[in-house]
Structures are given as structure tokens and as C-alpha cells.
Image 1: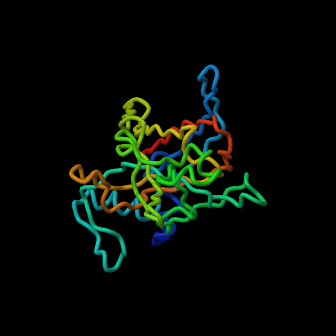
Image 2 (image 1 turned 45 degrees about the horizontal axis):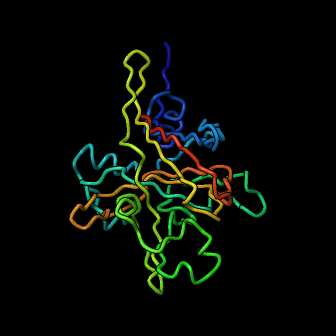
Length: 249
């Protein structure tokens, strides 16, 4: 008689197995390109896998089942009207001083970037100091187009406001192929030469939020994913980065 051994599959076993199965779960990657100033060519700088954090995976299930998780036990905000709408960048993805090209590994429990940095700073006294006067990322007042581009404001003293969220270049695009069993959304992000000047960036997050058109703001923002990468210095006044963010299912 042949004896069959039964084994109870633990949750951790299931997670390990999932990692070995192609095409399972929500995952993603980014490609970072530097744009050539003279000819506009895009040069691939680096490519990295992202981590869809626990909050992002939870929101995916909330949306699929139309069943918000209990905020008392999760600590998460409840709002099923949100979409992946913005992105943030930061300088806490690696030790810039000692090992700028060795990024830290993101954690599933991350709920924000380690050190978020603002895309632009609105400062009515821009010209009162040399460092702000010569920095194109510091602006005296937001134009109408800038008001539709930068979000997640943080008010400081003396009328200064920092903006940590930015919209995408175009609406996220579908890529779908039944033959290859491939489906993902392609999100195009851009860091202009007048943004983030003087910073060293090495982390990025996609951000959930609900747009309030009456007040031109995004409500209930939380990060969906986090990726760390080799440090990109933005000290040059001409450097422009184009980032392709791919979210697979």
C-alpha cells in the first residue's frame, strides 16, 4: 500500500510559493531615463522592482470587494473613491553620504517615504535670500497650471508652502495581451529641471487620493507602493528625468 503524506500548507508557505509563480499578485517596476538636453533622447539610467506595500494591497482588496477594512484595527483611512493619482519622491532610500548607490530595501509596512522632499516651494520672499533667489524650484506664487500639477501641500512659517505630490504626465495607459498573458498599467512620470533642485533622490511612491474639484485638492492621500533606487543628484539646473512606472497584475 502506498502511504500518502498530508501536509498542511502554512500561510508563509503560500507566500513563498506565490513568489515562484509567474503572473501572480500585484507588482511593478520603474525605469528611470535621463533626457538629453540637446536632442531630447531618453537614456536609460536604471531599472528597479517596486514593492506594493501592505496598505496598497489592502486597498486593492477593499476596491475589489467594495468592503472597507476596519480603520480601528488597520489604522488606514477609509475611502473607496480614491485612485492612484499622484507620486512623491524622497531622499531616504539610501545613505547619500556613505553609500548612495546601495538603496535600502523597502518594507511591506512602509506608510510613507523615509524622507519626502518637495517638488516646488512657494515662497513670497523668494528674492530675499541668494539660495532661494537662484533656485528655480522656489517660486513666489503658483500659476494656474502649477496649481493643477502640485499637491499635498505642507504650510511652513512666513507664508512658505512645500508641495510633495505631483500629477502624472498623461493618464495611465493600458497594456494588454491575451496571447502573452500580460496586463499592466503604464504610468509616465517626469521630473523637470525646475523641480527638486538641490536634492538627491532615491525613493519614490505612488499615492492614492480622491480629487476634490471644488477645492482643487486630493483627499485621504496614502502611499500605494514604494521603490528605492540608486541616488540621482538633482544639483544641475538642466537635468530632467523621465520615469516609466509599470503596475502588473
